[in-house]
Image (cartoon, rainbow, N blue to C red; front, side):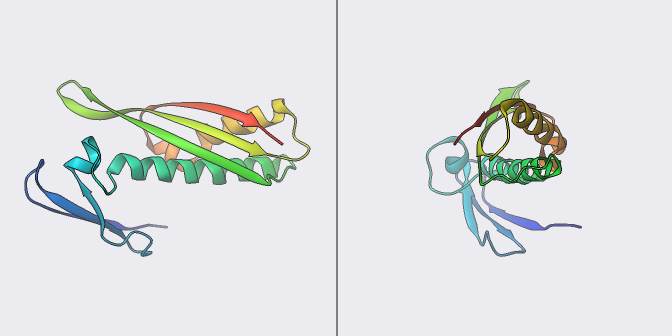
Length: 141
């Protein structure tokens, strides 16, 4: 299974602009630029898209793992913060911090923490990222 996206860029790094689109059409000419990546410009940036992909992937992986353990979450809310830092003269994604809050009827904290940790390592987006990935997981009502 392959998923496709395309990016177009015009101009130099600081004054240039681009757009990103996906075959599904969910992103259609979404703007990105130096300003949206390193300043407060309106639009998206690659790190924001990676964070969104990671949060979504993690939530689905957690749902699957909970299901295999006999639980069905009524709610899973995941946020992902991607750290972009200057390292060795260039920029690198150095870390991703996941925060998940879930409502899982019948699950105790030990079962939930195990499922949360397994989802962190088992999520396909986690596997592709070579950054340190941290996680905060809490079970709510």
